[in-house]
Length: 153
Length: 399
Image 1 (cartoon, rainbow over the protein chains, first blue to last red):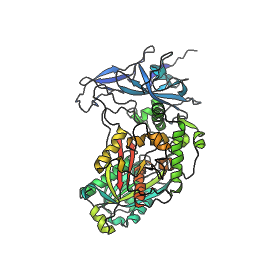
Image 2: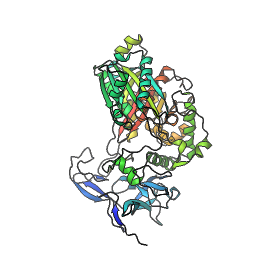
Image 3: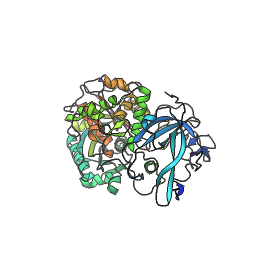
Image 4: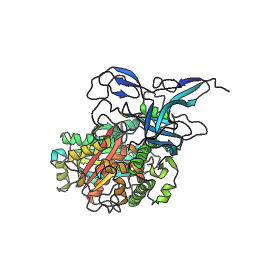
């Protein structure tokens, strides 16, 4: 039966709800070009820049795994875990254009055995948790199927 | 080193680490009492109380300086209370040192203590969508071991570290802590026992991740002049450097509790990493280098993280930590023993006390009083530690 629940982002303004090609929404300093995620709104992190204005910056949808792990035990609140708990993987992913690393859960069903440093991944949307009326959506990383692995070592 | 750049450590004291379930003030009081006795200084002679704070014990924890001062009996001493997560103790030491070096006081008491809940550390409660520490649990399910595991896996893939190497760190530290009366875990473990303990955050297993503990630690710090007069000798244990640096932009290594690193897109080549800069600043301040170090106490939140510290405090080059470990260099009896106290591996973490406890151990080491775990000829030691959100912590102790 299709879900009648309303899909809402688990946090507002951090990513687009575009199912086909979602992007994380960072910021870019209009003075020095520095990226930030989550968005910076009132100061530029670059100590050599006095910038106070920022453009919304959709971040690269693909990156390579910097490192990865999993959560064998249920994380404590405020994580909302399924019952029974299902372990998941987590990856820190390097984005080439932005020259930054962004964390995310890895899509369900992908264990650490299927990941390595350099694995190419892309951003997807998935349900983080749900209640009676809503599905709360979050970004996750998904290995690019058939993608080649590159090493950054 | 000139007297106006260093302070004397006249006393060190600790309450044993454990899961005692009592009020944190009790542990701090016991540690303070021991430190004062060790120094031969009366509480009423302390002019400055420097508390390391805990956020886990209600309002008194947030204002630990005054909490301990009241528990010891109000004397009107000046006070400060420092919170910097795991680096709180270093901040408290730094404050006390600054007061002494500024000539504002001669005798300071530094105290930190904590009572912790069981299991994973969790963020401050409520619905806190503007707090990255809250959000990383909520949106990612990223616990502290998540971050430790990212570093561990990276070591494996870049430098060829093995699960056996990580287990060997635990085995070493467990052996080091056997005779330490303040350690919570005093039991030898084997590689097989470590490797058969449950996986928590791949590749890290339960026995490789530090527990959360109750405990307390304290130091009596004084001006050099006071110490010479009081002790009647020039042979003093001193604190020669206190590094409390923040990271330099761009911080390109993912750090707890962040979702991302800084972007390096708009800047020149990044300099030292944060962890490297923490110790570099301490060496620079003390006017020495890693080659002068005889013993180190580093923050082994995980077994694998200890290996990162070998490199970050300059004991070896990047990628060589596993070789140091395998060669026994960092075992007591080796070239530069690391964590002779047993480290967090044997203690578990009592957050505001931990950076102070590291200094206590070095004080006992350079005095030659570390019974059952003494590093031969220990004269200069370094601590290294790091507090959430970018609080560096490294202290150099010398005799």
